[in-house]
Length: 237
Image 1 (tube, rainbow, N blue to C red):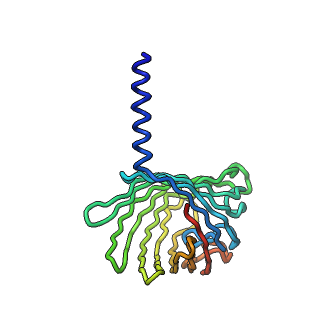
Image 2: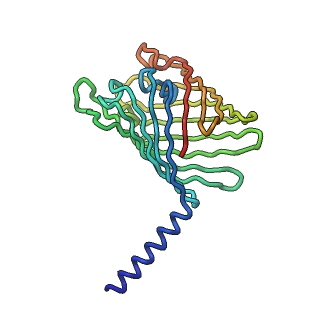
Image 3: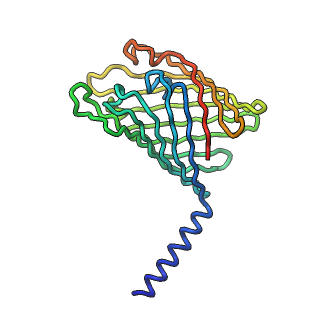
């Protein structure tokens, strides 16, 4: 038994050493003038501090965790969004694929509160395909949630284009949200769009973006869905 244990221990050690040699751990931190998610401000148009950790293996597997402050009145009393995710990305012939799962978590949210009455924690799956043409890269990703923020089955169709221009990159984005609302639910379908310019300076990422929606009542008369410009400074480690 001791010999068997020693062999298992040695094998596990060698495996972990091999995995470590083939994997990469990284961290990131950012500060932004507004956390815009699919065209909607998540923190009432206030600044947000964000950051996370990522694990990526050379076989394409990846996993990570990411967090940002949010407005607690939007998420059942929680002022933190904590996302956990995992997936696989890699080349498939002439294109690149990305398949994964993400969990939106909101610690301290209370769906039982009669003034709130909805579940914020949400599961979402996605599959994406992209192609780098040299002068431009384009991608399409489909996201699906079996119960998107407790309002019904949700689909998100996202199309994006990145154009390198010298030391800068221009990103164009258009997407559509489709919700199969639960009985009696309001129509929540909408489109969002955006454009951003990013670059790197002294090891920091700089991004100036604009996002907007075709909101037709989604934000209940507030300006959270209105077009806005926001600036983000980030650092990867």
